Image (cartoon, rainbow, N blue to C red; front, side, top):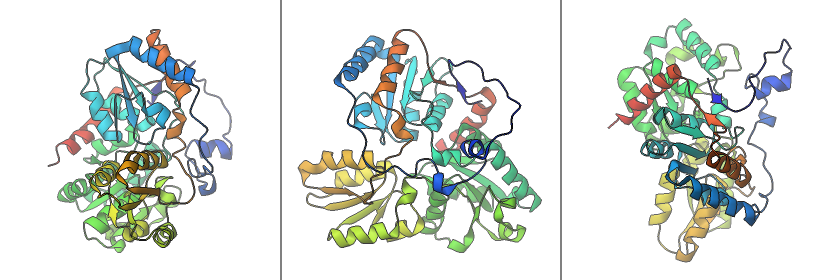
Length: 398
């Protein structure tokens, strides 16, 4: 499963993988080298005007045959060509609502394009302009690791009590595992309702792959204690947990996180409060628990946007989410005298999301205009069926 591309079929080689290869495959961990963590400095200036005109020409030639989706974290030079913008689930649903569009060009990351392929018709073709646009969080949980985790839960005698809940920011394989084992998908907007549903089905939840969203929802929103939560580490035998710990836990949190939101710290909050009197701190629930606890407001990407839209003129805000969006919001609301700053002093974009740049988008659009489908994302039928089952359970939540 995964991707259909125009590249030549991969040949299996009888070689021993190096430690670096294992790291890139997600089979080893190196926190100091984790993808998406280190991104100092600023982005280069937008691409040359010639590319802008080429993108416009290709999109105009394609007309209604193409529907371009742009995630909120995309660069401005790319987002200008999006027909709709939004978070990952909103965009996947927008794609499903356009069955007449032959091509869906997803300016986002790999798991988002997979979700779009799952929710669109078989006749529609989903294209990701750069196949290297992945998600470090989604990469932190592989199908093999999760299957091994389920074996650990079975050996501990608790698998029958566990309902998996997987964040939208996960691969199609993980969504399919969730559907097959009676679980549901959640977004950062409906995580609490998804957990409420899960606890109506069973006594425990396996929350994949973002530990922070799971912990924050359970403790901050649902009144559980930190002691109710344990962290399953796929790189340790039995997840680093004893059978007694698994039996006692209500929330079994996968050891995964967002590399951008995970960088915000309690010190970031304290620093911005010292620098900007009367500032409102608004953060995404993928942030660490201590950051969420210290913030004034917490919510999804869409919630952050709506909060700032409703904010009074003259108010001051420090936002803990991806920098492309924060800058866009700061520019948008500057005329209303709303001061909006990035929560952390260090510049950090989502480095994998930013792989979708204007040259890649132009290449994808011009290829489609010439009748050549490149970088198609296509989920296999069995995976799609079980993943869709999990997504449909989420859609059925009141």
